[in-house]
Amino acid sequence: MTRPTFRVPDDRQIVVTGSLAFDQIMVFQGNFKDHILPEKLHVINISFLVSEMKRQRGGCAGNIAYTLALLGHESRIVATAGSDFNEYNDFLSGHGVDTEGIEILSDHATASCFITSDQSDNQITGFYPGAMGQAGELSLAERAGERAGVVIVAPDDPAAMSRHCKEARDLGLPFIFDPSFQVTAMEGEELAEAARGAAMLVVNDYEFAVFEKKTGKKGRAVFDLVDMAAVTLGGEGSKLLLNDGTEILVPAAEIAELRDPTGAGDAYRSGFVAGLQCGYDLEVCGRMGSVASAFVVEQNGTQSHAYTRDDFVARYETNFGTFPS
Image: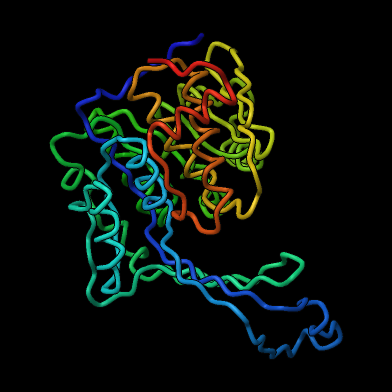
């Protein structure tokens, strides 16, 4: 078993920066391709009548904090939200998430993602950043609170991500850099500077390749910037890369039915960091990430899952054997 290079004290909060958003999910009972004329793409003007619409809580910070709460770990969100956030705020607070670090902007709406899916699982998506566009004005130093033990810098407005990484370094707080899909929006120098000094980088395998290309740090050179990396591999699990050349392969947990993969990565981060706070070996942390992900993909929506600690432990042991005490 491999010991982590850092630990989150068990009496400290996990500070989560990142997006807070609503996902507006619509279902079209046909196929887009049957209604789009290739010869008219230069003047496209089309409307799809949808049969279903759901408004779901989302955003990377909210997703991570919610799963941490299910696992019994304290978190504090530092993020921006709009005037329509009250019900979502009550939901998070009701699950024990500290929302005092959230800035409510009364003249903005909370970020929203509008997703229309057809019967072939093709999607047309529009994203309105709303209040998230002001996240770069938030000071982590002012909002992290007195009990901060680690910072997860999750996808957000790129300026906010860069600022929060810098402030975590200045505060001497270990931080986990989770650029995720924002690797495509951030320039190479910006990515490298944000990652510099991170205790851990978390990305999927495609994002890792983009990170390497943009920063010019390939292979072992990545560890000029970060202490370790966790690279998720979808249904294949994940791999943990350490600066001494060690590579740990972590299997995925079995799932009953794949319904919606959205949010699986956020849940993986929650499970992993929960394991770090418990002082577990990296192999166990990775497996906890796998189990946390499995609960999410079996539901529609990123915060539709719910379980007790006993449920989590039982599922861990079904997949990986005895759960550490």
